[in-house]
Image (cartoon, rainbow, N blue to C red; front, side, top):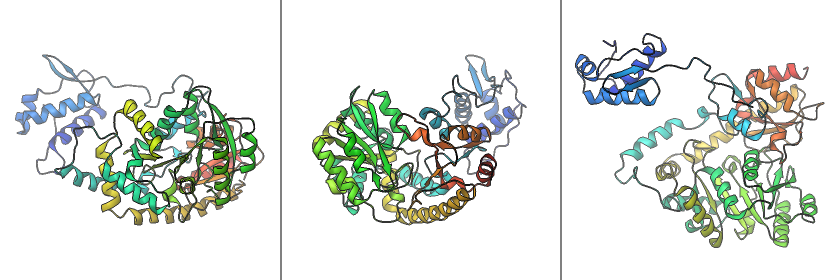
Length: 467
């Protein structure tokens, strides 16, 4: 029989105890591939538990790849892969630092890799216990829908809450002008699907959001970079580009720009809006990192009143990337077209996730939590700046909030080889080339300050840069 220690008094369900016990036996090689597990009735009788409990545990182990079910014969230990769990895909080295390659590295599960190049906070910085508590509370509520589809524009109370939050920023957007999405990434994709065709020209920040660039390339559009300064897009350069290009849209960050952490100055904002009106192009304003800004900031949607600006936000950076809850706000005529595209491309978004975000915003200490994160970021930003200066890196503009420091590597024209060396040392860096529209060489690197104080980074940079 199978030696399992099951405790009916434990808060861990019996099914989970069986799954965990069998997995441990398999991983310890006490159960080897091809060995037959006890029959369902035999295991249930031995431990005085329900057969349904054993069935559910065995089915879960099959789904996890630990067991195989053979009709009429029973359950057997499945063959286990002998190769490393992290196998190199064909061409991985060649494209390791193109946009998709960096995203693969960012999402790779690895306990020992130092991910200084990711675009989000470490999980331990977030309110994971608060999320778990609110999930339990939400699941117990009788009015929580867990089996149906959501609505076209998303959970109405959350849209109302977002409307109130936008009003605090000076952006007038009723709930009817807000649609919820699977994070800011889907919101950006819906805009591209709705308004762009192959061959269209779009303006983007240079440097700017690398994943957006990769997505726009899928639609066959022409990317034209607008040089980014510490106070936003360079107005003179933008005006000059508009003499030779007729863009459909300009995708830009206004607050805590990714990757430089700069924010838009009012004078630059007015000039960008003047040029958009004069040359008749749409502005897509990504404010994904806005909640991490410690004070007042200028936003294009605030000045434009959503006439030609589509405003995009997300809760992935402050609540949870797993929930994938974002939104866009736009003028009524644009909103109807954007929502139609959302319906035909994904039907609806997760109402459970949207209800959970609403509950976190209205019943939890969200503002106090964000204040604590801002303070913690300020502290590690100072430490990161000092670390990079000790290593000889150059920082032109110190960030006024957010999670990024944009630093130049001395004596080189392209930081990509340095990032490859870092990868060999178990450190993931984000070289500046991936943040450029055509992945042009760049000596700059984006550092996530929440990860950058790890001693391994300073040790690597010191050795690599001869410090």
